[in-house]
Length: 219
Image 1 (cartoon, helix red, strand yellow):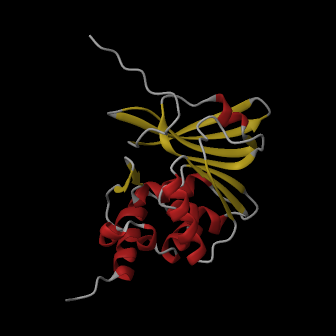
Image 2 (spheres, rainbow, N blue to C red):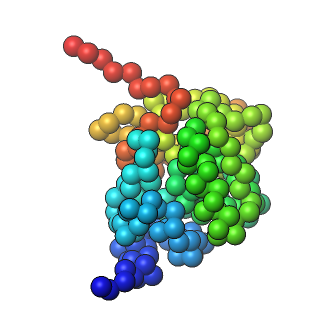
């Protein structure tokens, strides 16, 4: 039986999925190339690690598609001195990528299993600048301000706490709306009480646990 060629699959992922989505930042591409996505994928789906699918993680959560992860990393324009808050550690893969681009990452997930699994995987790959917490960060996390915030679940609307948790010049990635149309946004703090907002792409993500649910109407 022929062994699965992870390196070829990784190359194909970048050339056929990520670059066509206009992810051209070389630092991002290099990070995706050297970070073994297969090691952060549930064992039963390991051979699908580089496929254009949202891989189930359990608990109703999924691993983001590779092209979305690439766009998140590029849009956030992470700098080596940045301090990051990640809301929703999930598989730990995006955490690992962010950590390699930044000074430090605080990652919070409401599901203890995800935090424990991510801790082991990050340690196995020598990534030491991440602090992991089990908890509900849907209303923010502490009083600290961050250069970058990545929210990996969808919300009905952008809570003011996220804008206020950004440093001046800080960037927030978040997905808002409800199916069938959800919108990925990049929000940048340009003043003490001033922010800009850019629509990045349409997508769909499971809701962020603990966040205000999207209101629905029955007729």
